Length: 214
Image 1 (cartoon, rainbow, N blue to C red):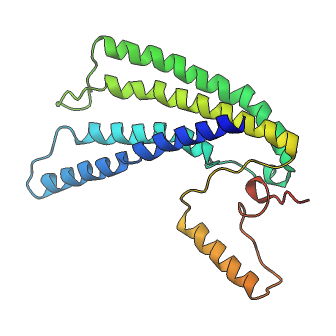
Image 2: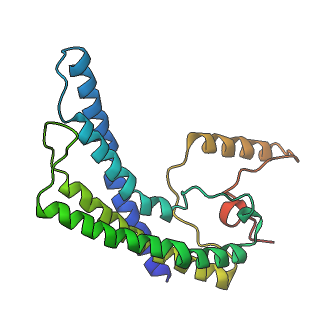
């Protein structure tokens, strides 16, 4: 199971980091559109289509990557109070009740949606440029498959946690500047021997800050 988790994490990370470059392409495209529109009064017919396709591709293809890093938003005001085994048990049930049915529906519905678009080589109706969008709709299927692969890895994580009582942590990754600064401030306070330190969640112990030593 650990081997599969590493494979899925690496696969999701590779796709997530590759498609993250979409944000650069979108920034260049939108920047170019702003310059030619307002300085040269020559707006492009393709900027809108390119921007939503690139952003949509980035959003979809980064889903599995975000899941592998436990980065999706969770209303954890109750969840974080549970012990790791309780967290794992609840997550395991919810994956089978909601996650896998939703992802499978995304794949099968996306297949019908994309195949119909490929049959007549659909183009965008949002601009006169006739930008092809049939390939863009194929992203739905690819994103669903990646989520399915990563979802199985998350189920294995739950099983391991149920057996051991601790979460198998995801690989270190890019963190928000605010979180880095908070952790640095906390470490400084600990070094100075402060007794009243508010330790930020996510660094000590199990998932979402729970201390696995308890």
